[in-house]
Image (tube, rainbow over all chains, first blue to last red; front, side, top):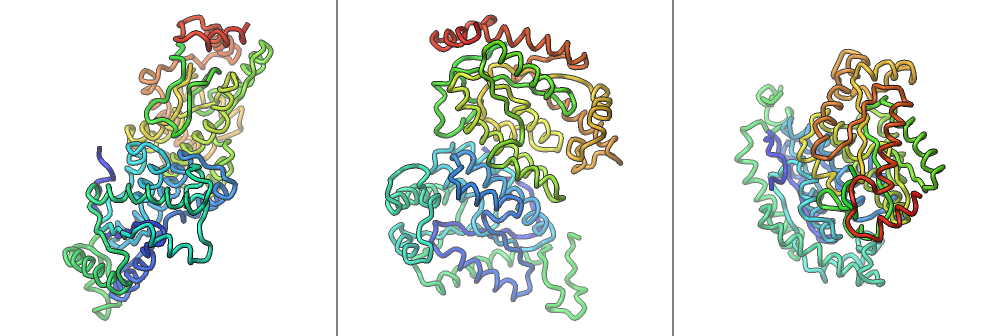
Length: 244
Length: 251
C-alpha cells in the first residue's frame, strides 16, 4: 500500500518523532534557530495546532468525548488543515518546514488504541513524505522519570486512560507508552527514520542532527531552496527562487 | 433491498465497537442539496411513529463533537477540501458511536438524512482520490437500505431558488470556484455531486428513487419500500431471533 503523496517540492520537510519526554521539541527548536541563522526560510508546525480544530480537540479531551476512531479522525482533520495551509505552500515556495510530530504520531498512538493499522495509514495518505524523519529513541523508564518531574505530570489521554488498561495513571501511562514505542520501533525500517539516541546529552544530539541536515541540504541548495535575500548579496538578485 | 443482518462494517470498522447486538434498522436517505430529503424524513418519521416504531433521525454536522465546529469553520474563508472531508468523517463517526449505534442496540429505526455517501460525493466533486475517501469512510456500518433521491440539476434549481430563496456558498461549491457566480458554480458543482452519487449506486446497492416527482409521490414510494423492509418481506434475514423481534415491532 502506498503511504503518503509522491509529490515533489523544492522545499524540505524535517520532522521529529518520539514519546513524550524524549526531548524532540527542544532539539527541533535548536535546529530551526540554526537554520534561520544560516539564512534559510523556516516554517514551524506543531501537532494539534490548527486554529480551526485545536479548540475542539481540547474540549473533546476535557469532556472525555473521544472514542479511538473519533480521536484519530479529529487529529487527522487538524493535520489536514495544517498540510493545506501551513505545510504545503511553504514547501512549494522552497522553505524548510520543521514539524514537531507528524503522521507517525497518529500511526503509533491510534494503532496503540486499537484502530486498524491499515486504515490509519490510508487516512494520512494525503501527507507529504518527509525529507528527514528523526526518531528520538528513549527507554520508557527514562521518559517516565523526566515526565513525572515536570509541571503537569501525566494527562488522561497521553496516559491512554481512555483504554482502561489500568486504573492507576502511572501504570496506564507505562502500558500505553510501551505500546507506542513498539509501534515506533516497527516504523524505523518502514519509513527510514534517522534514529537519535535520546539518552545522550542535548549538545551531542544536536551536533549529530545538524551534521545529518547539513548533508541533506548540500544536495539540495542549488535546487530552489529558499534563502533570505539579505544574506550573501546586497540586493538579493542572485537568490531569487526559481519556483516563483 | 435489505442488506444483510446482522450489520457489518464496509471495511476496517469502528475500533472496539461490537455490532453483534444491533437489532434496529438503519435506513439512509441520500441525494443532492435541495432534492427534498429533509421533507421526506419528516414525513417518514411521523408515519413510522404512528405505526409504533421508535425513530431516531440523524443529520450531517449535528454531532456533539464537531457539529458546531464545522458550522463555524464554514463561516471563515480558510477551510480546505481535505479538512472539510475529514471534519465530515469525524462528524459521522461521532454520531455513529454516540447516537446511531446505541439507538440500533435499543431496537430503533434510525433514519439518517445523508450518510457517508454525500460526504464522499462532495470530496470527489472537489477532486479527492476516490479510493482514499472510500477507505477513510470504510469505518461506517453498512445500512439496511439506502434510498437515493435522484434528480437532475434542472430539477433542483427551482427548489433552491423558490424554497430557500437563493444559493448557499458551500452547496454551490464556491470554495472551488467552478463558475463565475453562485448560479454557475452551483450548476456545475451539483452536476459533479450527482455524477459521483450515480457512480456509487451499484457498489453500495442504492435504491434509486425518482425525486423529480412531487413530494407526495416520492413519499408513497418510500413508504412502500420501507414498509416491506420492516416486515422483513423481501429478503429473509439470516439468524432468527433479531428479525422476529423486529417483525414483532412493526406489527
